[in-house]
Length: 69
Image (cartoon, rainbow, N blue to C red):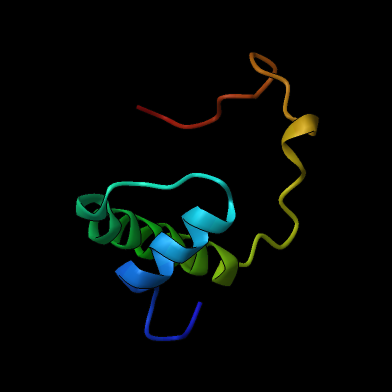
């Protein structure tokens, strides 16, 4: 995918290559959805998680509440 985003024609070609042909009326919607997902993932890639432990290290119910409400 180019920096300008996925075009409807590229979406159709990719779907055909994956064996998932779609009606012509869906190409633009699929391209727009793919571009949105790409933009969200790009933002997530920029986040600095630093010392955040992996999700497997989290134990529900064991966190200590020290905030005043």
